[in-house]
Each structure stands twice: as structure tokens, then as C-alpha cells.
Length: 326
Image 1: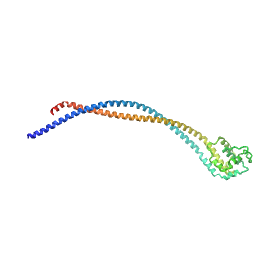
Image 2: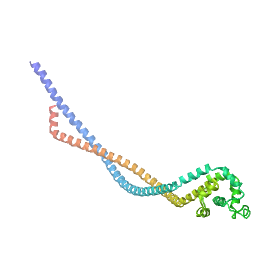
Image 3: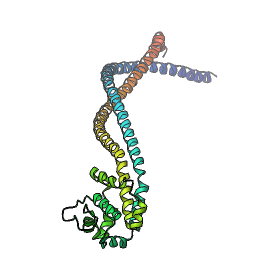
């Protein structure tokens, strides 16, 4: 029984002693950890101060850059809106011009179709005519005006009733090659009809006695020539409306090129500012994260110090008793 009790007591005393030794070890380790924490705080505190200073400086620069970027953004937005407005206005004007000009499409198509269906034989018959009628002379005069041919003294008196010499001129300049004459009408430069030509032609077709029916009776080919000439006159009238629009569109497009160029320069400047801001914001964010990390570590260390201090302070009296008991 004595040996059993002795053995049990040795176990109990050993366990009690071990608990005290462990407690003393913990207190010793706590002291070491406290020293490490204090050392860490001493290292991190200056770094945190530098980080905060850098953050403040970066924030000042960033605020300045943001103000500049905002100015550039406002300028770009204003110029972009102006450019878009001018583009829309030019597009509307161009559309209006095309709409007006489209009115001539049926006329031109009709004139071209008439020319394609025109019988060259009728043109040859005109070329061989010796005594032209007044209607034939009138149509030849109209044709000469359309192609800018002027009679000379050599043309006068070459045919009966041809006092102006237009029939003789038309035979020599136009009717001698009907194919070329037709091709000239089909490919006629309708965009650049002279006012003198228009004046002379209208002086003919606006006469009360001028009649397409009479022209057709005289020669079917001449009816096609007259219809073609009348279509050219209507196209000229439309150009009077359309050409100022075209000029206005060209002027607006020229101004728009300048506006777009200026806008491109401002957008390039804005991109440079935004890129710089992106770098600054990335740096700023990095510093913010560094500050938060350092502050978190310092706060954690301070909490550990506080808890360790309380433990050590509370067990300071027990420490000596534990040592004596051990």
C-alpha cells in the first residue's frame, strides 16, 4: 500500500510540477514574443509614417491631375458634340441635295432611253437634206448651242432658209458622224452646262411656236434631241438648287476636318492625362493597401502586447511561487 501510494504521489507531484514548468515556459516565451512584437512595431512605425506621407503627396498630385483631366474631358465633350452636330448638319444637307437631284433621275433616264432608241437613219437623212425646213434649222441651232458650236461666215448661206448658218454647221460638226453625235449626247457633261448655252437653248424651246409635235412630224430623231435638250435644261435648274447645297456641304466638311483634327489633339492629350492618372491611382491604391497592411499588423501587435501584458502582469506574483514550488 505504501508503494502504491508513493507511486501515485510521485505521479501527482510530477504532473503538478510539469504544469508549473509549462506555465513558467509560457511566461518566458511570452516575454520573448513581447520583445519581438515591440521590435516589429519599432520597424513598422517609421515605414507607416513614410507611407502616409507618400499617400498625402500622391493625393495632392492626383487631385491636380483629376482637375486637369476634368477640364480636358469637358473640352473634348464640347468639341465632340460640336463635331457631331456639324456632321449631322452636313449629312442632312447632303441628303437634301441628293433628294433634290433625284428628281432629275426619271428625266435623265427617259432622255437616255430616247437617245438609245433613236434611229440613226433619221440622223443620216438629216445630213443629206438639201432644203431644210424651219423646224429642222431650229433643232440644229438648238443642238449647236448644246455643244457650244458657233457658226462662221463660211456656214452662212450654205442652205436655203438657214440664215444663221446653224444647219450647215450642224451637218459638219454633228451629223457627219451620227454615232459620235449620239455618244456625245449620252455622255454629255450635264454638271457643267454654261449659262450662255442655257440662255440660247431656252430662247428656242420657250418660244410659243416651238412644239415637240411639229418636231416629231419633221423627223423622229429630232424629237429625241429636243427631249434630251429639255431634260438637260431641267437638270440645270435642279443644279441651281443643289450646287449651293453641295458647296455648303463641302465648306462644312472642310471646317469639320479642322474640328476633328483639333478634337484628335485634345483627345490625345486627354489620353495622356488619363494614363498618367491611371499610374498615379495604381500607385495610390498600392500605398493605401500597404498602409492598411502595416496598420493592421501594428494594431495586431498592440493587441497581442496588451493581452500578453495583462497575462504577465496578472501572473507576476504567481511566477515566483511557481518557481519555488517547482
